[in-house]
Image 1: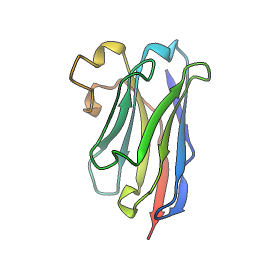
Image 2 (image 1 turned 90 degrees about the vertical axis):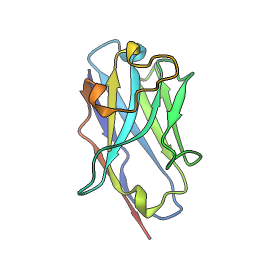
Image 3 (image 1 turned 135 degrees about the vertical axis):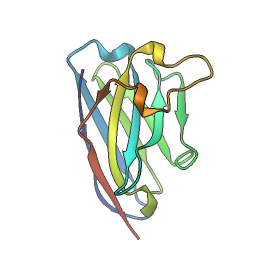
Amino acid sequence: VQLVESGGGLVQAGGSLRLSCAASGRPWNSYVMAWFRQAPGMERQFVAVLNWNGGKTYYADSVKGRFTISRDNIKNTVYLQMDRLKPEDTAVYFCAADFPGTWTEGHPPVNGAVYDYWGQGTQVTVSS
């Protein structure tokens, strides 16, 4: 699976951005897909995850109610709609994928170590 993120950029606080992650190389539509982010000098942080058909989603508390993860299995793309952005959302955002079995009942995969596939990242900068 090859993952390529796009859509990052510079935005003022309160604004919106939509990130995209295009997947290729496998029948990825059964995979769990997630977004993580990493700010300078900080550890990688879980943002959001969804299952193969988008029927199950899970968000970090810091983005709940502001970010929405979704997927289009025809276009082989997963999205992260980010609204009401804050300066503390500034980071490099990464798309990640893993096998369906990663998500067990009641345990959404929030640990980046379980993901086998990663994109190269896209920079999001939110100015105050």
